[in-house]
Image (cartoon, rainbow, N blue to C red):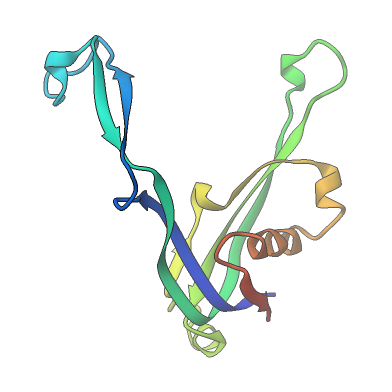
Length: 156
């Protein structure tokens, strides 16, 4: 199992061409002395912000993506409830590697372009029905293909 194709990465950035707007922020009383707004602690400060836009920051063509690890965590809240029914759910987390191409991965699996892990690809509150008795790895690949930037990736 793997994915192959064009992979895009996006990030949110300030739209400096748009009209800025102001926001009033209540500063806490307990700012540290080295904080730049220490003298304004406990007061309302007006800040200027810009609207956010999604910007393409990186595009890699004909890459090969392999999920390196996936884990399923059962979160069972039975200990917090007196009745016998447990509002449990599962959390799934996976990390994946991006290679220049399939041949590069086959030649040296440690020679990856990038490794992406952590909260960036965390799936919250998955139910048994959503898993639908699927292989966990297959579920993770299906989830990955639905993410922004993976629209042009296909099963390899």
